[in-house]
Amino acid sequence: MPRNNLRELTLDIINENELPKRQILKEVRERSGKSVSDKTLNEILMNLLRDGDIYITGYDFNVYEGMKRIQSIKAEGIIFGQVKTNPLEIGLLINQLESSDPSEVNDASNKLKMIFRGKIEEFNDGTEIKNINVLFNKIIYYMNCQPKDQKDILINKLAWSLSNEEGSADLLKNLISYVNTHK
Image 1: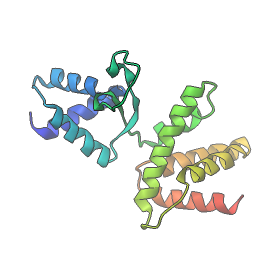
Image 2: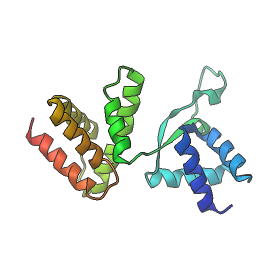
Image 3: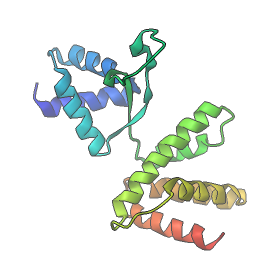
Image 4: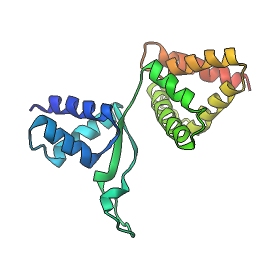
């Protein structure tokens, strides 16, 4: 199976569910019918990470099979997820920030911050932007302090600005500027 097809297969598998590397390798081997090497999968995963198609969502400690003292990091435990850049999916993540489930809020926040960081890097001219998380939190705080109708508008603008839609980077710049001038 050509490497490009393996890349698409890997992306499809990760799109279905966030999985640790060892499970992704098992799925790729089963679905492709090929004995795909660990190195081939590593290369595919690194390219997907570099291209911003996937991200690391966590770590599966089950790879240590009950070991208490852990002194190394096994790549097999790294959990990968697919980056969602559709404005609707991003809007859903923003709405999850108001969930009563703390783990859901934390998960949504981490995903949004990762997307936000990537978007900032996309239009950044090389100057160091300090405290990207602080900037993100400031936008969310500002948004949450608004009346419902204004908040809904800001949620839609933030979702669009974090998407991969045309003009989204300019919208994010404008949104950051707006929030910074309306403290």
